[in-house]
Amino acid sequence: MNRFVKALESKYQAKIDEAIATIDLYMTRGAGIGDHPDVLGVIDKYLSILDSNNSKLELIKKVFPNNETVQKSETDGS
Image (cartoon, rainbow, N blue to C red; front, side):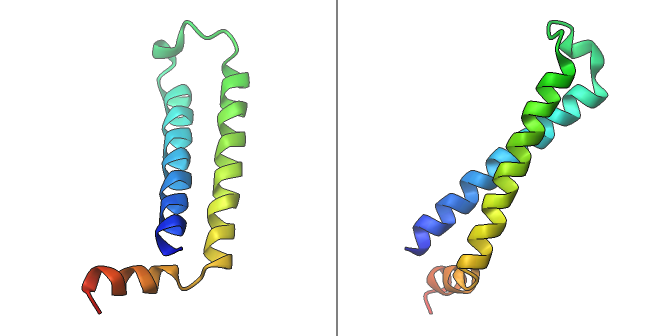
């Protein structure tokens, strides 16, 4: 079960990182997004993705609070 929890954490964190990078790109590099006329729509879309995956990640951490401790024990061989 712990590997599944870790996989979900990794999946949600990757989506969070992607959303933040995309939002950052749209907010700071206006010249690189000239082909996208609906900049606000795209930023809103990635804010929704960010919110959803952040909520899922926090929920996983609440439901399985000991997963980090168990994961360290598994990798240490304890």
